[in-house]
Amino acid sequence: MLYSTFCHIPGIGYSTEKKLWNEGIDSWQRLLECRDRISRVSPHEIENVLHLSAEALAADNPTYFTQNLKTRDSWRLFPHFRHVTCFLDIETSGLREDAEITTIALYDGEQVRTYINGENLEDFLNDVDQFKVMVTYNGISFDVPFIERHFRTRLTQAQLDLRFILAQLGFRGGLKGCEKLAGINRGTLDGIDGAFAVLLWREFERYNDRRALETLLAYNIEDTVNLERLLVEAYNRNIRLLEREPSLELDYPNPPPLLYVPDLETVRKIKQANY
DNA sequence: CGTTAAACGCAACGGATAAA
DNA sequence: TTTATCCGTTGCGTTTAACG
Image 1 (cartoon, chains in turn orange, blue, yellow):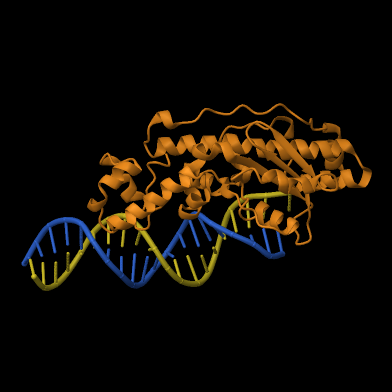
Image 2 (tube, helix red, strand yellow):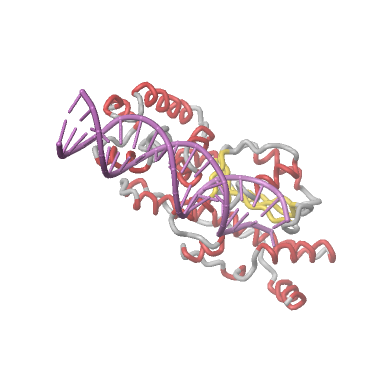
């Protein structure tokens, strides 16, 4: 899909891109051949951008594309960079300025890693370093700045933020809302949200209750793992919407084995104390 | 609570197109 | 050729959504 992407060229929007596709111009190679037939953009400019695009792809540099595409179009680079992509979600102690990261879940499509404040949180930076693309939900506004503040560093990964990718497809209402619209069922974790995750952390800190922590981690992991499924869903829907080759569609991923089981007794207890 | 980007409405620009 | 109009793209304010 990246090869037939032209809307990252200044002066080419969605309608021009679609028009070119309908004329059979649906690859960088073909556009390069026809570059003097494109009005509004000079042949030299087209050659320049396509050269940079090919170079970025060959060099495994996804940032070039996320910087030149709109956030909502960044799904286009996913298959090409899947081998260097991670899915990430953080939990925090609240939304206030002084809130801290409590846990992080990091998923590469195979393995889940978790990081816990006070235990191994500082290992995160080293581990995340191996990835070039980071998939989140609202991470551009929330998770990334939060992490950058905590670790006093800048994350270099190209960002794929599903909030804007899914909103473009009409999927709104937060991560949980999008999951419902996509037909994803959360099982026993249904009814747990970010605010409840704050309470689970407090329970763990106050009583050193390992079951509360494991419930929190189970929730954190569920959010993170579902990001992959949602991205594949968004990718496939866009392929159909843009009338591209059906063969471009991706298989739905299998979720990884469960690492933690939510403790329903703990959940019940906290709910009782707070409602 | 702050952070961030999209959406929205609106205006401006420039090339394309067609009529005079 | 000149002129008027149309269309796609871009830019600029304000507002809205989503995160725990």
